[in-house]
Length: 331
Image 1 (cartoon, helix red, strand yellow):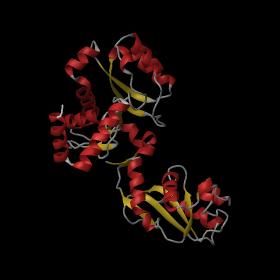
Image 2 (cartoon, one colour):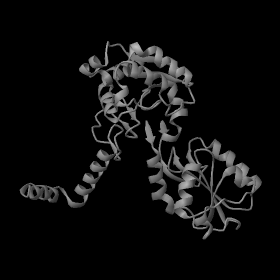
Image 3 (cartoon, helix red, strand yellow):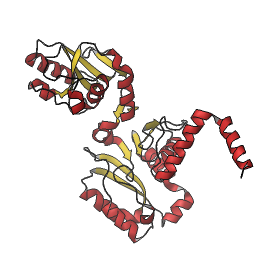
Image 4 (cartoon, helix red, strand yellow):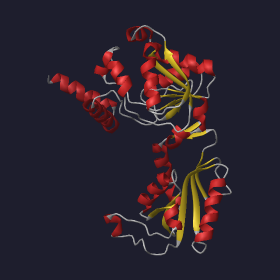
């Protein structure tokens, strides 16, 4: 199972933009997902941007104030770059090519798919990176067919996490369960919702899911008497891993990176970490590839941590240690 995040997409586009033909004067994004890399390329290469329908209708690009000073959107392009996020069978790209040839046959067009199932694809002029199937992209996770055979966490994915004051295992928590704000919305039914919420909160959980249009087959909840007992047993990851194994689901999507690692180890199966934006594999004890501000960390704490990390990166461990000893000596 391969996974690419928004950050991966931006990185791939940035480091491969040099492959774009120099005579490209207009970038066209194929809705919806193709507009993401098309926008990135337009900004990086300082080119005007259109969506596919606007291009086929002959519209001129709309430019911001800064871009208008150096880009003339009314000039006929020498070459158009038509961009999609990915290509597999090539059917969608062939349909686009046929439409473009019918409307603008005299304007040369180059077709780019950022991610392809193979490095060279007969229906694309350029593929930036080969990402074989099965694969999931962050921007299409909630409408991916894999959800029909997946285990899905609730808090931190479908809705926001409770604040500390709301997490009282009582009336405040019940109120949170009924009024939590949605985060990601699934466009397809989810096979298994797996949450470490206690079984006694099933009525509130089912009501929230129904009111927010979440379609699912099974709702798995932790059957323990209290949150205190759940903490004592450290049951969060072990419960989720047991359901993952029992159901034989193809993927577990977990909100917290630490729990994702634990679930992967216990189940010996891959887990998608939303917090870490990575696929966690059994035996993978490394941290996420990118730094991220922990959701439960205060803003000041995050700043201190990032400054500390930057200092170590610039000065090195030995220099930092010498500074600490010097400061202690003057205390």
